[in-house]
Image 1: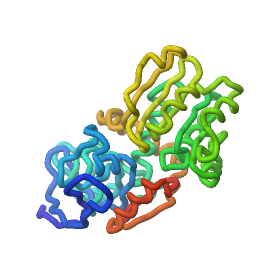
Image 2 (image 1 turned 90 degrees about the horizontal axis):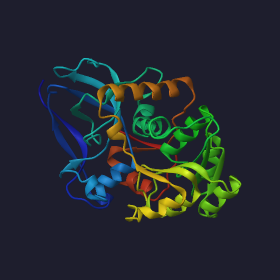
Image 3 (image 1 turned 180 degrees about the vertical axis):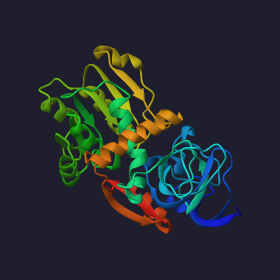
Length: 330
């Protein structure tokens, strides 16, 4: 197969959204274990901001770089050894390495999954990273049973709205935080049992009031620095704080002794460890697809931008002006 030139959003140095350049890149044929995918839609996630800004060395990418970890599209060619996909398949992925902000790419096939016909390309691009994250948070990180209470920060975001519905479908009481009354109402609409507007109320005090002073056994947090200590105060004895993001900045180093009073646990999770194994990735995607096809989870797409406007999309996400998921069109 001959090479083709495709449009891509590229950064040549770390920094603000103004670092994006719309350019062309050359795409060739897939090698062993790879596919060539033509994108139909691209997902936007906060990890993309981490990569763009290099919030820490953990998010360093080789420059120049095409960012983006999530997309959907059609397989145009498969390399040797790829047996679960074929040319013409509708697919979606959350995958490493970054490179989704483009019209087409050659990429490893391991984390690419066949997309059910009932799910649109836009939904596929908006749900993989976020939905698989919710899957491991609720099924693979700590034991949760019907009736358990969970405090979930940023409940009106892309991950949050999926989490609200997931919790409702499994009988888990999700207390969601959000930064406005409108966002709180949205989280309730999608399944949150209770919500807290953190711009008006101290969420830790509200959680203790809502639980009659008992606290919750689990906090799920993608905000990071600004919510950390108050989140610990919300936990009951033997509770667990699950960190899966740092939207407000990295959590400062702590004295582990502060956990001893209530015998608390802390874990910092990441999706790409969970989906690094082919079989586990495909099985997790199957569970997610079943949730969506059954109607238990609806993928809420509230913003759409063109690839040419990727900088504006990043600005809106960082300013917390978005709700639900954001899709980039190509």
